[in-house]
Image (tube, rainbow, N blue to C red):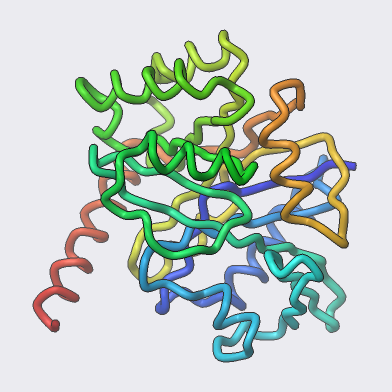
Length: 267
């Protein structure tokens, strides 16, 4: 069975979840000749965000889609009756900004706290709980001192406890980062995610760049299934989809900064 996993999904309050799911199902499952049988979105929620709980508790609409909490408490299954579509799975996850100003992601994890801690401290905590830790690429964040930090974390934790994550914010014209090339040589998984930014309309990028996995998803424990694949250096993962060009990425970042400034002025 083919499973497509977007490992880097933000759902901000102004994102339309129903529209996101409609577009995701149509684009991935109808237009694609090699469409996957299972779609998985891994939320990377930051402090103060509660999209998962709001959807699970019915406090946030998913349009024509019905959200059903998974038995594991870490997942939601979305189905649409008319026209029939689904399932699309959503997995809990967290994003932290570390003391060194890089990001760390956790898959299948929902505890708060952790922002501002050293990256190694966070990763030790996660791996002690057998929770996959991902280091997501972001523009400018893996250069110089922080790039050396990423390499030290790879040395310390190895491919059994750590993976790297690519993003639609890396322009399609840019060459593969040296740390990604090194990671693959050393047996680390390099996964893909969309990383939608914090302004309306960005939800359209979800799953346009993601991770194809040749593995079954256990409907009784979908979060554990995804964790198992991401922690298995022998698992085959392939980046699927496309990243936008540099001009598109620059426009997205500019719109993100403008929206952030407007929110700051209102507060």
